[in-house]
Amino acid sequence: MSKPRIRCAIVIALACLMAFPAAMKAQENYFVTYTHHMEEPGSLEIANKSVAGFPRAADSFLGSAVELEYGVNAWWTSELYLDGQTTAKQSTIFTGFRFENRFRPLLQEHWINPVFYVEFEDISADKNILEVVGHDGIADFLGRNDRADKEREIELKLILSSNVKGWNIAENFIGEKNLAGDPWEFGYALAASRPLALAASARNCTFCRENISLGAELYGGLGDRYSFGFTNTSHYLSPTVAFRMPSGPTLSFSPSAGLNHNSHGVLLRFGASYEIPQFFSRLRRK
Amino acid sequence: MKPARFFIFVLIVTVSTALLFAASGDGLWMSKVPEKARANQNPFDSKPEAQAAGAKLFAHNCSSCHGDDGTGKNRHPSLRTDRVRAATPGELEWLLTNGSMRNGMPSWSRLPEQQRWQIVSFLKSLQ
Image (cartoon, rainbow over all chains, first blue to last red; front, side, top):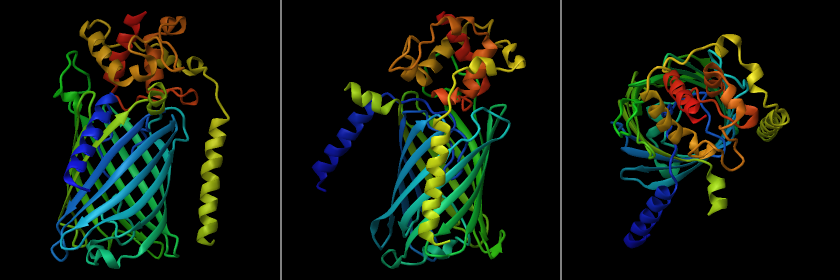
C-alpha cells in the first residue's frame, strides 16, 4: 500500500472512532487473564494487543492481535482475533485467526463467578503469547516463520473471578487440544488489579485516579496429559497498568518477566482498546 | 474421539447452552433482591458531589442504552418510571451489581461499589 493510501486509511479510521463515542471500561486490565466481566450487550470493542520479545538465541519479534469483541447478550460474549507478527531478519506475516465465545452460567453476582470459554484457532508461527500451555517455551521461537506448522486447536478455559473491596481477582485454568492428535495441554493465569481510586470524582478530568488501574498477572504452562506440572514449561510475572481516557480509548502496558530458563527474559506488552456502545443500533440510525 | 467429531460436539454444546439460556426470561428482578440488600443505605446520601460524580458515570456507562436524560433509547427502558422512583437505594445498587441478564441488563460489578452508589445518587435525583 502506498504512503498516501496509508495516511488516508489512518485518517478514515480516526474519523470513524471520533464519530462513535466510546464507553468507559473499568476493569479490563489484563493481557492474558480473563475476568467474569462480559462485553455489554450490543457493544463492539476493537482492541489491539501487542507483545515485543527479544530472545537471545533467536530473532526479536513483535506479535500483534486485532480483537473484535461483541456482546451478544449479557451472558454471552463472542470474539474474533486476527493475529500477525513481525520477526526481525525474517518476515511480517498474518498468522491466523481465533474465534472464541464466553458464557456466564450464573446470572447473578457471587463471591466467585465462573465463566466458560470455548475457542477455535487456526494459526501458524504464532508469537502473540496470549496464553502459555503445555511445554511452551523459548524453544518455540527458534524456528523460522516460513517453516512453521499449521495448528488447528480447540481451547477450553474455566474462568473464575471475584470483586472484593475494589479489587478484581481472577483465575483461569486452560486446556488446549491440537486437533492433529497431540495430547491435551494445560496452563494457568492468575491476576489481580485495582483502580487507584474507588469513588469517581465529581469533575470531568482525564487523569483522575479512578481512570488508572494497577495490577499484576502470573501465568504459565502446566505440561500435558502425560507430564503434568510446572517443569519444562515457561512462567511469567507481569505488573500491569491501564489508563482509561474518558470517552476515549483504554491504553495498557505490561512488562513481563520470565521466571525460569524456559521463559523469555522480558516481554513488553502494550494494548489499546476502544468500545463502541450499541454498535448495530448506531449503524441503523445512520 | 476423532478431531472433527470432537469439534462438532463442542459446537453443539455451545449452541445448545446459548439456546437454553435464550429460552428463559422473566424481568422480575425486584422480587429477587435479598432483604439485606434492599435495606442498604447509600453511603453518599449526604454528599452533594455524589450526584455530579454519578451523572458523569451515568454518561459514560449507562446513557448509550438509557439515554442522556434517562428516558430510554432504542427499546431500552426509561429510568424515569414509578418502579425506579419507588425502589430503595439498596434495590437499585443490587440491580447495578447483579444486572438483569435475562432482560439484557448487564452486571456493573466491574465498577467499584462506591461508583455504583454514586450512580444510585444520580438516579434518585432524576425522579
